[in-house]
Length: 322
Image (cartoon, rainbow, N blue to C red):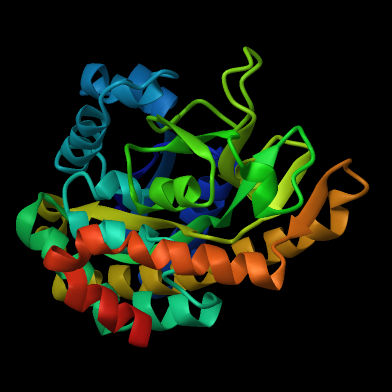
């Protein structure tokens, strides 16, 4: 048998987080279907240079991305063409299916076990199934690619009061996350995703003092450990490609994606623990929220859900109760 050649696109950075996920999937697939597939793992710059469709997909390489919808369209179109698998942020997919935004809501999840129950259970399957109904792609499993969001700065920040009147860079337009930060006294500056722009940093031009980030995406000296949102990503495949797979192959892809996603989330948790353990030696100060600050921030966050209530109130309730 000649293995079928397929491609997994690394659509954004940090590259090492996404490559290891793709490699893990490749290993799992080879265990279940040895010799069936030859999976090429290719970064967006490599794809743009080597394959057709590059002009459209080049939008995601823009360090100053202006049109998120165009970038999502480019990724989805690639998955409908000669890319077979990829992985991207739920806030990106939310541009096509707003239900994905619910996974990004502040303090939606109590802990990692809560995330696991939701994304590996009926709710995760429901969210992915709806995406498949309304777009040209299919969601296979949910990954972290960063873990909890925190607030980073090159100035000391030890409490919510230190965020008063501070300018905080956040990815995306006005969302419940930005509203929560504004509710605790910060001023938010929304920017489009830096899909290939590298680390989350503080601008050198003085336009902001803080950035919403994750441990594994940050380049800052001080971190306020708010853990106010989970940076969730999704493994995707194209429906056109999916239809060419046998039932056995489809089952294998689904199982491999779920196993890989579970492994990846555990990696992210371990990475976060190591980041904290090494922080002092690396010149980074991490300050957890005080118990009262956590209560106050969670209380303010709940009010930001109201905008989603009419459309996704039941889904939010079910996630919270899972």
